[in-house]
Image (cartoon, rainbow, N blue to C red; front, top):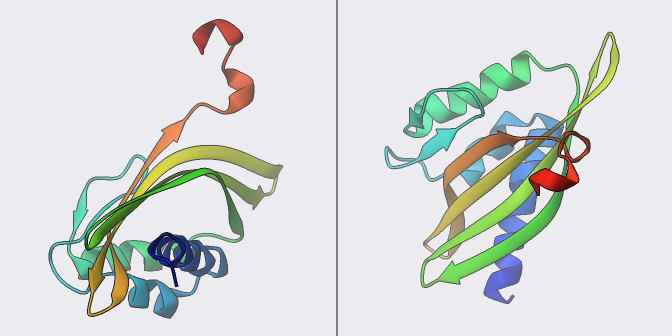
Length: 137
């Protein structure tokens, strides 16, 4: 499999684990050591496998239904490192209806024993497209 496709596949598995709220799948994607970093929008920086997995457990335990659809996906590969830049378009169901939000994300992967493992997930909120005027672009 071409490296670019391998990275896209690893990234897709991450979002599949997120959308299905599958903690075991999420655990299998991350490098299991202290070098990992995760930055959820509005959260402090999380360092290390255990704190990152705990954050996903907390998110899954406190989310009724959320789905992420990606757009603007790009991949860069350099030796045993690769990163994916993408926009997460989040849809969540609440009592008031469906809420949408947009987050720009950088996911960094390292090849470990032939497998691409996530070592960084950095997500930052961005304005929704409808809230940005033509003059601001």
